[in-house]
Length: 320
Image (cartoon, rainbow, N blue to C red):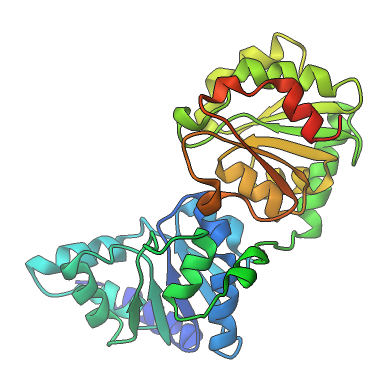
């Protein structure tokens, strides 16, 4: 049973959020970037009501103030777990207080779980709508998310969808400080993004090394690695290529915005770079670029096996 103080805190939250729309989204970075047009459509539909995003903690943090999101929440918070446990008993007071504080809840989470749906409906007092995380229709996933919320999107409109977002001035300042420390200059470096969420989608690291050395004749490379790519760092540092690792998504986006170009795999980082406004090349292998390509000034190069794509071909696609 929550204390009086805890209940009071939820009451204050309810008063603050009474007009807010909560979007629950379980996806990774690339998925979230593809959701941006849908977030914009939801805000417009609800007369500009504040949007709050429940997602992976690092994504909720990044989205706040940048993707039209007023406030972020971790999808791992206990009120979500209480919804899954509700099948065995009544819904916890905390879950009712939290989800019931929103004017509307739009959930892309667990849409095939009847118990979760019923629990969220009850906790939100019937103000929840449920949509699949993976839209079943063909075409780009960004258009699929829009169609799920009943926004009509023609093929021509789908081809022009815009996933761009704005960065804070402090994001750009942080990136500029990073560049200065590395002896790099705005517009005169190539961002190298050699990782992804799946090894099967990764162009060989040695190909990225070869490409970086080709680009260095015209534009200095900068390699950005996430936690999943930590093992790749020695491959690049052995060739004296500058590497930054495990930095915040906002700084990655700012580094992309300030870069002359980027090269990446079919990955969230490539979606982030493209949405930040960078021009570049996204390398695809087993996945379908018609559905998953980054939207923006991005050239898609697809080859199976991935190793068959030569670094010289990518350099030529970048005009190098």
